[in-house]
Image (cartoon, rainbow, N blue to C red):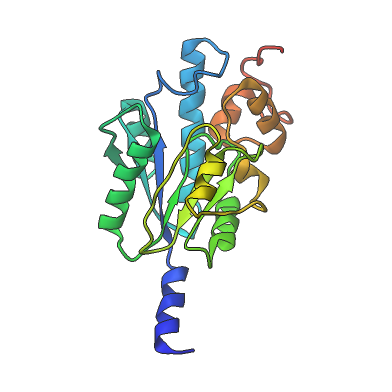
Length: 229
């Protein structure tokens, strides 16, 4: 292996910086058909479980949470994440851009992994597998379980991080040239927007914070039952 190729391989093996954008709790997950205070609790729990999975992954060297919400900021800092203020609470892509800028300034030698804060099933090994599958692609993304949306976006060191989250984002990310990681682990593809999504997430196994609120479908008794269909 030439010295140049060896250096490139070393860069690919460096832990990435994860960027996690989180909306104000009062504005997030409006499609979750729950009372306002219960929805806030769940959104916070989703974010905590997502950050816990990232901080527990050896391939993630740092986690940056972009938010304007003080409760999210407090929880993220307690988990060891760096908190960056979100100057625009309405645009997910703009929040991501702020986080990416902070990530590159702090660790210019590392790649970037964008992770939405609504992956309560995520485990460190799922993050490891996504990063393994992303190697060799300058930019890539994880389609959601429906195949039309996007959960994670991975970019190698030196690549421009451009995201187009929202409805039908998988098609937009494909048009931007990102490689779809269609074999990504199911828990990395399962974001939660609706109660039906949450019910399915329970069957996959929830993180501790979310399970404490709704139960894990097995050993736990739900603190409160989910509404019926």
